[in-house]
Each structure stands twice: as C-alpha cells, then as structure tokens.
Amino acid sequence: MSEPFIAPDGEPRCRWCGAAPEFLDYHDREWGFPVGDDRRLFEKLCLEGFQSGLSWRTILAKRENFRAAFENFDFARVARFGAADIERLLQDAGIVRHRGKIEAVINNAQRALEMVEREGSLAAFFWSYEPEPATLGTPQSQSVSDVSKAISKELKKRGWQFVGPTTVFAFMQAMGLINDHAEECVVREKVAAVRAGFTSPAP
Image 1 (cartoon, rainbow, N blue to C red):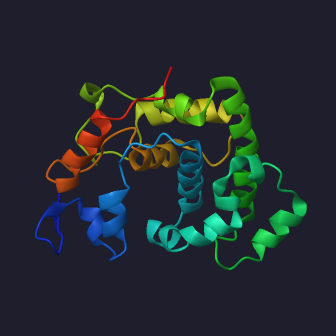
Image 2 (cartoon, helix red, strand yellow):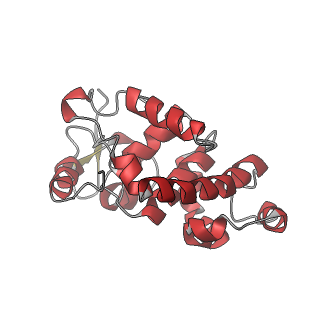
C-alpha cells in the first residue's frame, strides 16, 4: 500500500489527489460520492471515455469546455447532433478533438434515451449493479472488476461505445457505485456517510 498524500490541512488523502493542485477539491467534494442524477451520470461516463489514453488532469482542466460543447451533457439534446456538430466540435480547441470519442458521445446520448425508455432512468440501470461491500477488494487495488466487466458487456450489447471495463470501473469509482477511497483517506468515511443516506434508484 502506497503512503497517503498529506493535504495542506494535515489530513491523509488518496495518494493520487496529490498529483496536481486541482485534484484535491475534486477528490474531496465529488469523487466517490453517490450520484443519482442522469445528466451527471452521463457526463461522468462520457468524460471517462474521453480520458482513455490521456490523463485525468487534461480532462478535468477542460471539463467546463466539454460542458459548453455538449449542451451541459443533456443527452436529449446531444442525441440530435449531426454531421455539422461533429465538424464544429473537431474545431473546438477547448475539448479533446478525437472524432471517434466525439461520435461516441452522440451515439451514447441516443442509447441513453433508449435506456431511459427501457429502464426508467440511467441511474436505475447503473445502481442495479451496485456490488455488495463484502465482495470488494482492498481500495484502489484494481482498475477493473467483475462488475465493471458486466456493465461494459451490457452497454456494448446495447450499442454504447468507448465503455470498456477499465473506463467503466473509473466511472464506478467516480460516481460512487463503489467507495474506492483509500482506507486511511479522511474522505472515505464522509462518502460512506453520504451513501448511508442515499436512496438507490435501482428497482
């Protein structure tokens, strides 16, 4: 187990959040806290897809630009994007200009609408995969899991793109499907407390 990062307040955090100054606020206020809002879930999954092959620092720095470019990740609006929008986005220096990833967001927005029709919400689908705590290994000891493989397989079956098991696992960490804060991290208990008061949208 690597040594924790000791933040300016003197308290230990997950080691990764000490890698860049902007990571600390994201780590303390957002990463791992349970999310039940469909738009935010769609955003998180899309941004994890954009991160593939890149650093999270790059994506986090561009997050507001991504939000502006993709209608604040309102997937009902993004689903209507066409060829002209793709070309516009490929000229947008504020985001990651990768045609495959841009097209995947549009495709996935269309698939998200289908999922809402079928499942009631994105949240209901993703939270139905919440693993039992007893099945989880040591925090931050893996980058893929049986659950991330299962979600990835089902999403691909439904036509989603850029949703491999590693991307899905990072999404699971970010949106709180698992609490993957290090055991000594002071935020771990905060996330657990919020999760205890969170009503799962799963049927």
